[in-house]
Image 1 (cartoon, rainbow, N blue to C red):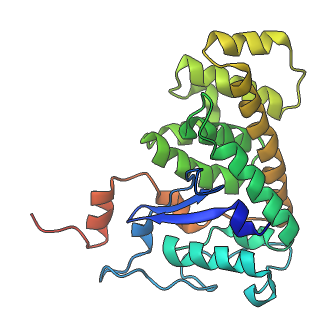
Image 2 (image 1 turned 30 degrees about the vertical axis):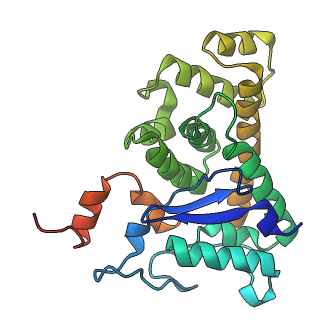
Length: 255
């Protein structure tokens, strides 16, 4: 099956990109397209020498002409419609088969419609475990996604520094306690599961928490290996209401 059969891409007007497993599985990653529009209101031209984010990797970043068509098609659509191409696409394209496997499992974990974890919950797990693993790329990019999903501009920053003093609910605290237990490869006991069940998680939710922590342990380590750096666009996403963002870019209408 081609990558396009595994990872379908769509665009929502003025909001950004969504990655999904299939037409029946809704999107996950929202990016602020307003950050990539020129003052005239037209989308700025994005190229491999983007004004904002040069890709960094210890391994060769392949030229698109040397990549399989399904990967090129996806990358060009992301770049054109979303305004920028997240560096994880560029870096992992060094190994196309692993690129496909990575994003297939990513979507299975992060985009699923069932279960008791919200998309904001899932992103918060990534932020907390990636902070423990000192992964700059994942902390910055997934903090941006958490801000968008949760509408809370401060919480991901707090979690990235020290989740134990962050403004978390008891449920979120229990979720992150367990995620960090998995992240540190500590022994899992029935007491861990019982504690989570007391906060409303069922056994499938607990699997999801553990799987996300485990998958991003891989992602964090590959980011370290490759020296993957976050795109500049991620840093401001979800921090300022969109009308204020537009005003700062000269797009707001006069009242």
